[in-house]
Image (cartoon, rainbow over all chains, first blue to last red):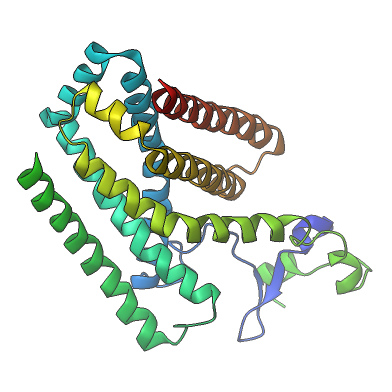
Length: 145
Length: 135
């Protein structure tokens, strides 16, 4: 090994053996057993990217509102169609997941909830919270609509 | 020493510190990390406000939508949401590209395209809210 950049990525594992240090993304590789922490982590990223794509719908909705009555009724009708409803459902599910797990991340950044039992509990709580919030949203939505 | 260890053993006569110096990740990254968190904090109430707005505007016609955005409270909160949301999104996309695209040239190109698109979406959203608010 003579390349300086590569040499920086060599380390010793707990048995003293020379290994290549894992580079992000590696949580789903052989360095870690699959567990709730890796699942919530990758889902945070996936839902983040999905919500990013969803902002196109947000921008389209606002632009159509400016374009006038006809354009706005077209986009509102699209949201009420099966495809639109499915997209909105996935959007809300992703939003509430990212919201709940984001709160968990902010708690970690404040130095709280790092011990394993708490982390596993809050991880489960994130899934429960996301599903409950999504369900509440759609019950209210169909009542109001 | 077995074959694999020999392959990984480092044959550079420089200290660990000398090899690491100047190559660390902690350059200007901390500022972006902090802004990512601050926009996240702002988005906690703002995204809840957005969800409530969406419920209030379900099935609305253009007149009701325009009347909603004509309220200064709503226009201001939507503008704040747009600013925080797209800033948070730009930083998130940057982290994803930095993690998955090893080639510096490709990464730079994708970053420019992604940030250009995000900036455009943010501006066109804000312009729409402003036009609704003032018309």
